[in-house]
Image (spheres, rainbow, N blue to C red):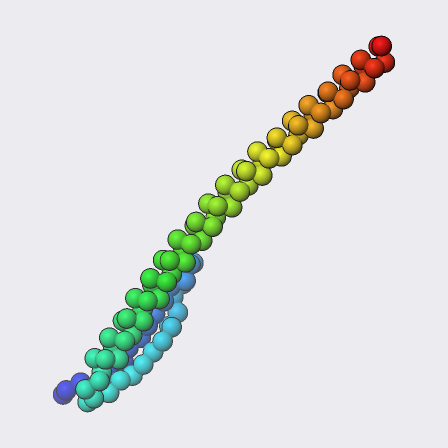
Length: 101
């Protein structure tokens, strides 16, 4: 008995490892364009996968930049604190000289 239909199921896993059916198609094999559809589905899957990898790379880069920015903010805050302490010390020294004179 020849096969006349093909069922294509696209099952996907989420971050927690759970799977769900993303797409299901039943195709008649008596058409000559069945291979075009399967090819298009595979290409679409590859595009989706490539985009997911790019997105993960972009997110990782942004996280790294935020981390570096946080460190820079800490450095600037320390610099500000040191500058403030230095200015206060100099002001006190000037005031002490004025009162001593």
